[in-house]
Length: 264
Ligand code: NAD
Image 1 (cartoon, rainbow, N blue to C red):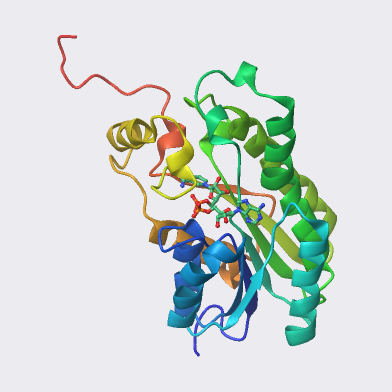
Image 2 (image 1 turned 90 degrees about the vertical axis):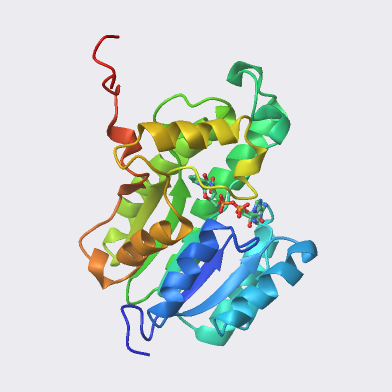
């Protein structure tokens, strides 16, 4: 293939269905000639993921639960065996008990706090540890975050704390791996209707709010996140690391919108 990712091999983690942000990214990467492997969580998702991967010519599907170190070891051992080296990884994984994605943050339980941090934050570090060992010629590592890391968003709660820690991890790992030519970045996506997002209280209202108040006056698509990911994963982003790139129709720059009606 003749494209921005021609000859590159990447791992996509976090594909659940055709609404997944991971799928928006994978489609863009496929169009640009990347060869990809997919990891999915649990057998129940396999039947969803298999036809999607097949539709872009990918056959390497590996089960991986990121809360299990052994499972991560097996995933990377498999990639080492089939490919030897790796050029990019997309980490599009997050999880929290949805009963705590409503109500007050202050009521978060210790068990869910730890689980959320483990799956949504530490897993990216654990992935980077293993991936960098397979990137002798440099590479690009990417994760997904949300504005709830920066400002209080309704119901985001413990996920906001987790995303703040994830964004800071991106900075530390970027410094650690930069000397090896490995770039580490995050995309802060605006709200998109996915399986994970449906667990967040009042998600429809959050989508509507963003549509009405972002500079572009609309929400973003999975494909738009895919295009931004292409920049960070390919040579187009060769000068960018440690960055949190907002793909949110500009929502993060708005402090307050002017009232359209002049008499209010
Ligand atoms: P999604 O439900 O399609 O993807 C979430 C994925 O995480 C699923 O594939 C799920 O299997 C995986 N996962 C959860 N726990 C796991 C575990 N223990 N081991 C392995 N995989 C596990 O939803 P999505 O919205 O595409 O989420 C992808 C990423 O994007 C998440 O980090 C999410 O926080 C982030 N994000 C989403 C939005 C949005 O509005 N949808 C906005 C900003 C950021």
